[in-house]
Length: 201
Image (tube, rainbow, N blue to C red; front, side):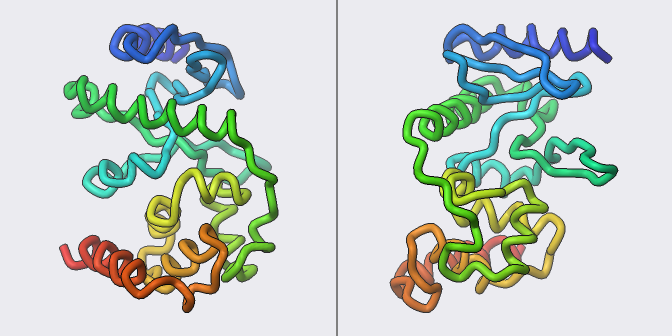
């Protein structure tokens, strides 16, 4: 398996060379890929996983991803990285674009870290919603903001397929700092239309 992972690392360095010099290091039995000491991808069990971000939402909607998981205290924990499948490997332009989104988001987080509040301190944040977010690997306000309301909602829906649009409003309100009922009508309608487009298919 280690040989497969090294093969995938070298292939990633080749395909994504336009992002800069890609370094790797061992991390929890996997390997992190970095550019300028910023982690944007992981290689585990011979597979490449890209860091999820708001810009990767359209791709993840069209291609529901497999998320990187690891075991913690005997329980599976979902990490914020989605698997690059073979069809994406064959579309190098798309792969580079998504990898650039991952790197840009990681650098943005690194260079502009905000004061990290606990999720429970944000508007609309119930204990239940905070628990769901934690189980999906979204642990703090910074991660919530980096992913955006839509990506967070998509991740929650993987284990809660009947999640309502009201939760999407709550996530958006938590990010912008208002009660979900105070969101502008135009934004609520945009979110509702987007959510409906996913469930209507």
